[in-house]
Length: 389
Image (cartoon, rainbow, N blue to C red; front, side, top):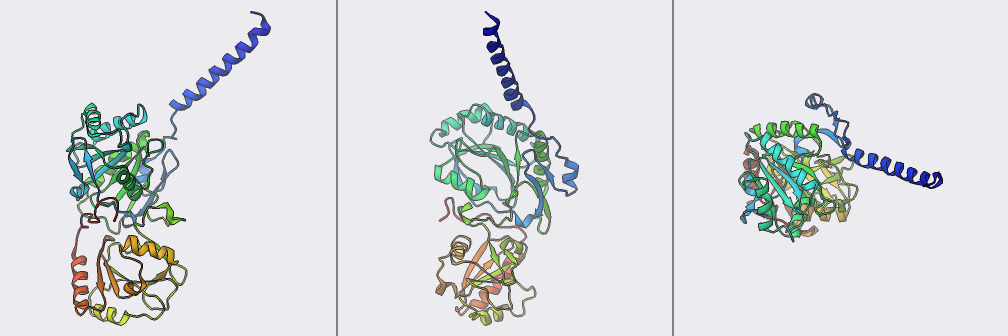
């Protein structure tokens, strides 16, 4: 071979070698600055995980709750998440025909499961491919990891329900191409507590610590700040379409401040609607609450700023429609709303929609407030099953 012909061959070989080193070296090279300092995290500083997602310190009460769901496990049994009340659990997403990342994720889950084997925590791996991940397929896959349903279950259901669970409770994509590979933690009290990257050793060390801490809790950490990678907690989305439905809401106060529904965590609070600044129904409400030893916040919601002494917030009609239909669970009918008072418990659950004109309104309201104030722990999720009705 002449030197003239040899040069292109050598050049092309060099390009291939460099490309191989860059591609495979990049794949094997740690993608984190493995510098998540757990000591700093424990001291309350904001750290950073390998993908740049902040470990934020936020009030526990700002964490969103996870609603009830019903799926089928790899043994063919119906699984109802309501049975988990009082038990922390771990959620991840996968599909069994994935030959690489999903299997590596589940290998890490097996390691992590063993690392917290002395804690009462459950693991749930949910398929994103229900058409192919039948119960027999999930059973075979679970057996390959020696997964026992009483500790680690592989779950399936309808595509619609699976998407609703991912998007509604965890704000993650549920499909084969782009499903999340994060490990998600729900605490004993039904709050979406934290998320972890399975492929980062430091984040998985943090996983073990957080799971142990959560499992050791004996009461809800109301008023306590927690560290989490669930950075969507408490965020007011720029577009409501970012969420399938509202799990909490933000409103404007007349003086320009934001009102966030989860700011009331730890208190029994009331909400009512006013179509104008007439304060209709206010005297009956105040009379019903008169003399109560613990004053309850009363949020008056309207389409425009109100001139009232009590706490009030407003928003556009389109947003209020979603607030009432999705958070309070009633149609956005102004005439009927003007006669209702909603009672929300210490954990953000709407428990009553009372008729302010009813003869027993005052008695019923006081009884409800007293009952919910006495509760030490949140109720189990009761809002039906997915999808939300």
